[in-house]
Amino acid sequence: ERKLAAFYFEEGLGLFNSQKYEESIHWLKKSKEIDQDLNYNYLLFHKLGLALFNINLIEDSIIEFEKAINLNPGNADLHSARASLGRF
Image (cartoon, rainbow, N blue to C red; front, side, top):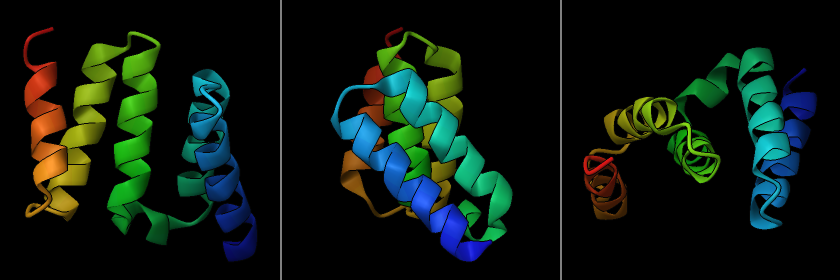
């Protein structure tokens, strides 16, 4: 299952980079459902938050950014991204 979750995670990242945000969200969410260890990977929540933002799901995006920040509180980029969402 871990390899499958890693595959889904990488697929989600690739789709995100191709600006296919809805598909990216699907695979990122699926990866964390399969492998609970991914729930400790701030990058998953960061990319998920960005993808949600890009399809105008702002409140959901904020939730994912908060999770990413909780996992990596020293990451200034996460704080900046989250702060920029406060204006929506």
